Amino acid sequence: MSKKKLSSFLWIEDFRPQSVKDILMPTKTKRYFNKLIKSGEIPHILLSSSSPGTGKTTTAKAICNDLNAVFIYINASMNGKIDTLRDTIKEFATSKSLDGRPKIVILDEIDSNSNINFQKALRGFMEEFHTSCRFILTCNYINNVIKPLRSRCEVTDYNMTEKDIVEEMKPKMVKRLLGMLKFKEVEYEEGVIEKLVDLNYPDFREMVKSLDQFQKTYDIISNDIFSVQMLDDEFYEYILTAKFPKIREYVVQRNLNYDELYTNLYSNLIPRLKSNVRGNAIMILNEGQRGTSQVANEELNFMATIYELLSDCIINQGGDE
Image 1 (spheres, one colour):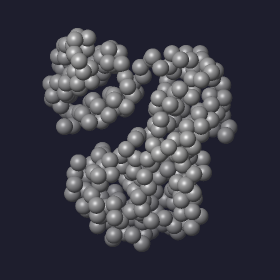
Image 2 (cartoon, rainbow, N blue to C red; image 1 turned 30 degrees about the horizontal axis):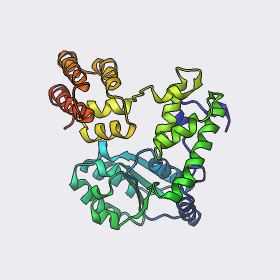
Image 3 (cartoon, one colour; image 1 turned 135 degrees about the horizontal axis):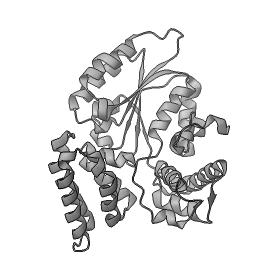
Image 4 (spheres, rainbow, N blue to C red; image 1 turned 180 degrees about the vertical axis):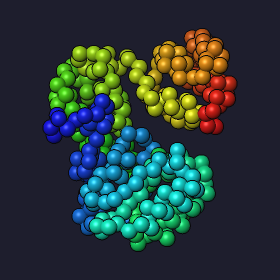
């Protein structure tokens, strides 16, 4: 890979694999996808993983690239409306590919779509356009995907917690991260990358983001990376759109320091709020941080603060319930 080809400000985009052969995944899973690609045809696919950052979306796009397919990408959690099916997807699925290339619709985060009618309607679309178009769905919580959709897809579970898979994947992740650091000419201390993988496994995306954010401030990847709390735009977007379960999942999975969380929210969230709710938001954060040293359960205290923040300051200024 030439450095000239890397133009993104974010490492996660710079190093995003474009082909299935370059994706970090268990050997048996990669063998399955390579077999599909070699055949030149795929069924409807559902990529499932309870852990974020395991490569579901990257895999979906890479399959399209490897098949030289014409595809559209839709985030079902944000654009999962009946009109999206009737207009965007139907128009794409019914139009013919001029050069005979396969056509694929990627529907990301299908489980986060709270409109059950969307999933029911999608089932009909998958049947109606089966001969002209394929669908690749991704989800974190497979039980939130209706059974008729699951039954129409080949389901691939990205569960990487089995012992043999952990033993296979951790060294691969360490090697890939070290390769990124070498390519970017970033120095690192002995043992830091192995620890980073252990703490964040299987969320490879979080590993890359942590390295990227840390190296933007510091000259060397050191053990200090584990004491610096790094919150990205994804976290603030969850708050601004009032996605309470996503906020809790983000905080718990990263084992964040609650005192530093309040400081980060004060510095980076308050400016994003409308001026008429900032004062109240500051008071809520202040009260929540004060309680951190007095409560038995810091997570419960923080999430209660977040709930009050959402109720009083976010939803009232246009966030989604």
